Length: 65
Image (cartoon, rainbow, N blue to C red; front, side, top):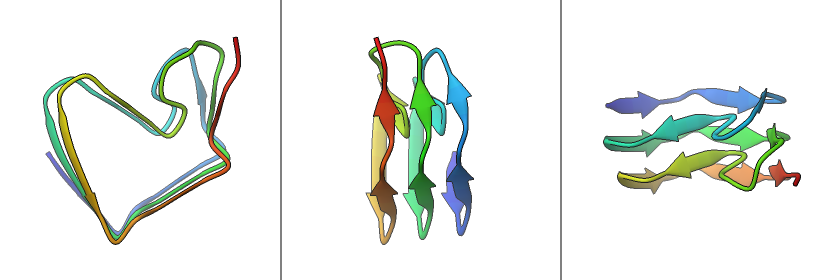
C-alpha cells in the first residue's frame, strides 16, 4: 500500500491509531500527530510487516497502558 500526502491527526485506537500495518506500506510526505492508543502498540504507526517512511513527520503520538 502507498500512502502519500496524508495527515493522521488526533486518532484513537487500541493499536495503530494512525496506521496499523501487517503487510507492506510505503509512507511519503505524511504527518502523524497527536494519535493515541489504549494499548502498548504504535500510536502513530503500528507495524508488524514492512514499513518505509520518507519525508514524513511523527510528533506527539502516545500509547497509554
